[in-house]
Image (cartoon, rainbow, N blue to C red):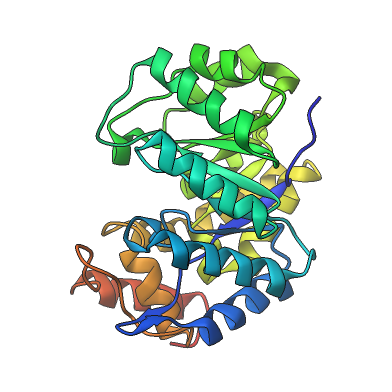
Length: 295
């Protein structure tokens, strides 16, 4: 069994920004808010962190800031994936240099690599990384599906330790678990499937939801870990309306709106993303109020 990066709930945090750049004050407060509420790991520069529109030098600064702010209290996982293998290698090297505990690498988007190409891509990244690699499969955004047999082949690499599965296809997730056994941790990339995934043996979730409700999100995965699936299922169902609102427009548009309403920076996203529209915003804020969140 390879070393597990984390078990339970990891937050893929937003990157608070203004038109002038990164809002490090809000970022620091957000990190503290997450840790105070029991989150098990922090993911920076993922999709929710708008990595696609942040320049590499700023990405490195954000990762370095998160590493320093977290100060080893929980693992810091850095998103380093792009659709250019050489760029991924450079991003991964930079994340390793500033102290990230692991890297999260999405399948190359737009290029739509073959399964053979994906094996070569992830193998090169894993060979170059000095920290564990978590693969990220989200074909709805990338147009590229990392198939279970490909995941199983990559699981043989000693530095590839997990996959974040965001296909929404439980059958595919189960097949990965069947093929990989204890060679690979499987994390859900779908907040609505946290409990079903963990009931099947998943190690946890890399979450958008936990930006907004970290305490309740951790309670859900903690219940799974101790085997209380009735309690976990109730939390999953109770949180489903908020989850639906957080994905009612393209992530991280709703997450940014929610966190701004909670005082964590401005409701600012970089083009081509735009701020959350009505009636979606109103529904999101209403659902947050129902859960007792002051907005």
